Length: 111
Image (cartoon, rainbow, N blue to C red):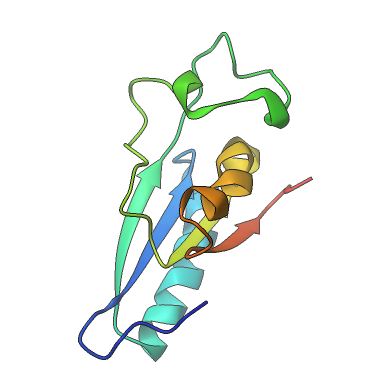
């Protein structure tokens, strides 16, 4: 991960399915980073459409996200901290979408 220039804060996305117990772990990690360097933290919630929820991660695409999910589009963050099984299909792809600029951290059941 490249450190942001001194004129720009690090952008961090905390991505989860919104369950407090899961989200708080990723948010705590983001806040720990924020204590070390200027950062802007955005919390993003993702939910899969019921029809696609049970598909294996490798088959899921962003088009299968429920309309209630937060938008996940460029500009991509410097740091993506995701937690839980629901975020895994996105975490495995965000580095490619960002052309290698996003550092990805995946916690909880990353299989």
